[in-house]
Amino acid sequence: MVIKSAEFIKSAARTDQCPPPEFPEYAFVGRSNVGKSSVINMLAGKRKLAKTSSAPGKTRLINHFLINRQWFLVDLPGYGYAKTSRKMRKELGLLITKYIEGRPNLVCLFLLIDSRHSPLPSDMAFIRWLGENRVPFALVFTKCDKLPAGKLEKNINIYLSALEQEWETLPMYFCTSVLKQKGKDEILDFIGKTNAELKFS
Image (cartoon, rainbow, N blue to C red; front, side):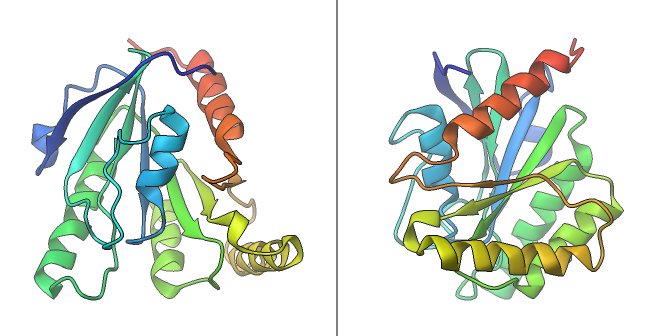
């Protein structure tokens, strides 16, 4: 897929403020500081489409971007940032949950995972919740350039082995590196093929 246009549409503090569900929607979510905004900018081919920050927890709204005037790329708030108040973490978690449960045009949720870390309980619990609620999703391992190839493969295999304890069929996954533009074509091709199969009115 070639990205010809990527435009910011709106930010929403509540799900009822999101744009009408007129287009297929692909949402990106993950723990704070996982590199979500950087991956979104890589996919869109625009450095500053989604705001990046060295301070975790910057995204606190649901941000919609219209790609090629055909589908929405959605930047969801990060979760699990310890320095955010307990009330804020709860509110952001509720916002993410309401979005996932309430968007009829959500085609796939991309869950971003920092490839440098072992499986975290919060991520595993979130994956379990997605499965229980039959939410279509894929894993996106980020910062894959930060590890030697052998260590990267080992970390991903640890994650997959942990998932195999609960899943008969493992979810699709992608490895990404913003610096090396790794994973960009694979994710966009997946979205392009999925859109081609959709009968979306």
